[in-house]
Length: 302
Length: 87
Ligand SMILES: Nc1ncnc2c1ncn2[C@@H]1O[C@H](COP(=O)(O)OP(=O)(O)OP(=O)(O)O)[C@@H](O)[C@H]1O
Ligand SMILES: [Zn+2]
Image 1 (cartoon, protein in one colour):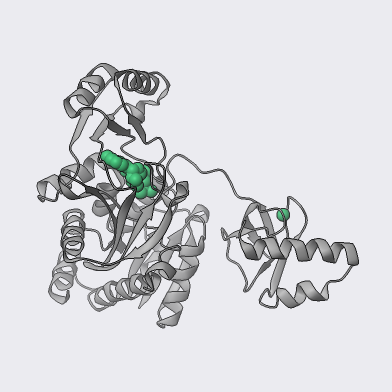
Image 2: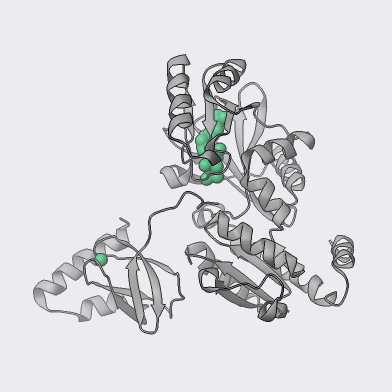
């Protein structure tokens, strides 16, 4: 059984994953996809892999490569459909709400004028975010009408066409932290709280992470959130609302975890590697079968 | 800058003053491969052969570096974060 790991930059996470595969005796090939030329009609050397785990830092590269690889019939981790749901906050909101998973209220508008109405429906403060984005980039809180008008107008004037979606969320008055649950193969394996004096609590923005207990409520909510997206592996970010309780804010399909191994005592990389190997093993056994039969086989085996 | 980076910088500074490299080598016993930092020319160590795209930090000048060639190992300043990068 063979696995490829596609990447664009080899960060600590990717190194830890390669080591984890090696430690469990799984043959893994790191592939820097910046150097690859794909033929969408011929899988060529890719046919040797039973699964591909995507760790590209660029969402564009991820979407295009996973699309091609799935076109070859290769099982990708995560599947394209899950990546599409997790990487777009609007798609996430819809998936969570259809699955009855508690998530902050959202309004979506197409321009600054209707954006202001959206904000007023939710009340102040409200939060505006790009639907596609990470590490807290361009996430802004609008505390009053003046701020809302200014931010909405700036976005309308300066944003590119792809940013012409006004995704506005109710602000959750959380206790100075958010919670992240790591879910691998449908199982929550670890949880951290990310704390900061700033209301944006991304570790990429200087928040500090601390391991916390995986309560039944956290388990239940994060399992259901991941099921709603179909991800094999994901980090579920939750906000503690003093009124509504735990809410799922978003999911990350290619999670960072370097600061979470020591703080939780859980070898996240090894869990990921083992799960990827299980998926690849199932596909190695059923390679001669049709893609539909493979999916059935996978469903039965899990 | 982390503690290890800080202490290494001091050692490097001391070594440059004294021409003493043994102490540095002692601290870097794990580093089996090295390459020059494109910013400050300090030697950046890897504890095994790096792969293309591997990220490293210069312990001298704190630059974030990326391996752009593996034979010989060549480092460049890591590019700025792009709009579609993330988790
Ligand atoms: N509605 C909200 N109410 C309160 N705080 C929020 C809200 N939305 C986001 N935040 C804070 O801002 C941070 C970044 O927001 P969010 O996670 O939605 O953006 P992101 O760019 O996708 O970040 P990442 O994917 O890296 O977690 C969250 O971790 C949280 O601390
Ligand atoms: Zn340097």
